[in-house]
Image (tube, rainbow over all chains, first blue to last red; front, side, top):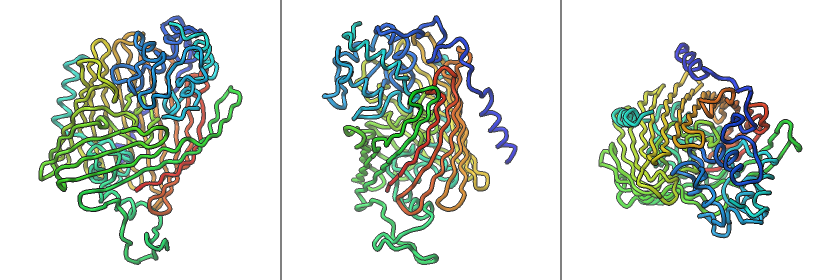
Length: 143
Length: 375
């Protein structure tokens, strides 16, 4: 029995250890690849945040995206701008020019009154990253 | 994984038979029971059966109170009648409430400490059995936080022997080891949390030590279906009194953005320790980076220190993209669970993340205290 436990532990822990982060940005994306560098434009936010962090399996990626909010490239913009949450029509995901009342900002900053803070279970975005999204919305949330 | 291989896994799973996904699988390992023994949902979670509710009041708490007088039940005295939420043979109720206080310590961040009372998480369950043990209509509604959200609503028809069943409606897709912690890597990368549900049909069997489930759903996460592709998910387990193994395979057909998931898991009881282990692989096509494969593992030991006292120690590992080097993460958790009386559990835990150094959030430490009230 002890042998079985030992094997279980060895198999499970094989290859463990956190990465050094060498050659990666703060989101764990290699520099120069889609998803690195962040600026207050939709293309940059899509490449750095929505794509690599939100549009992942089981969250907001693919056909099974939570709450129908698919944030893959090519889908995200249409699902965000002036679109209400299906769970509460008063909660609009992105209101161009109004980051304070945009549901996405509340969800990212943890001030939402509906559901959990995003990314679900963390790690949450650094405030500097959220501030870039705020600035994009304040500038009109252009595509 | 190529399509034939995926289908082979699905078929293999269907031919074998799975262990279920439950809110607290370690209890199933500790007792040797299947998930269906304690949960209405054959794959675990949600409303407890009459047996599960009774077990939770007699075997789990450190001490018991008389439900009518509130007085402690003396040692050796007859057991007080349990409250199981059963209204009559056809109707039953249940509920879960979790109030959480949390402190988060994030390195290299100002302020580095955050303290919060999380919004209360609460679910209510309704089980209606127009034909006892044959036809069930089941509702699982999340009533907090925020607006009410339906997590499961289905009709389930069982054979007289209860060995076979079929259900249709909204449900948790059967996949892998569905542990209580929704933030575990094996849960988040697969999207099989208790916030993840889908609409479709599921069939299953429970024969001897074998359990098997297979479902076909929209693959739209409970949202509006927008394509012809469907999500096929299967789960097979073989349960013995002190150990169990399980295999799960899932494919969400979505044109150029297919997702494939495989999970292998096991449970083992050694003395007062109930072990859980799981390895999960998720492959996504059509991402901005092309094909991306994620892998996560979990190893958990649950030590029954005394009746009503459980120490849960967990190690997790995540490789968020197997093609990218040095992006791996770990998480260590220790959670002390104390159930002083019926219907009440207190959980004090600490979780330490260990990720890439440039991401402060991945290296945060979280301490939480939770009050879990349920029946």
